[in-house]
Length: 81
Image (tube, rainbow, N blue to C red):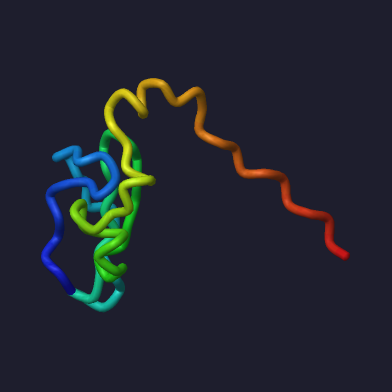
């Protein structure tokens, strides 16, 4: 497992919270950004866990976050066939 990051890959915020640890100690951790709420598991590839490798088209600034109108809702489940 890589060392836990102290910088959000998506918005570069420095406040990252440890949310959960794997059932097998040291395998992975789940982290969450306090500003943009992005969550990731430390065992994911660098493009999801490291700011320098995170795709620029998905990065957010504090202005992007403030201007977001709403968090999309999860649609209702489809009826069983």
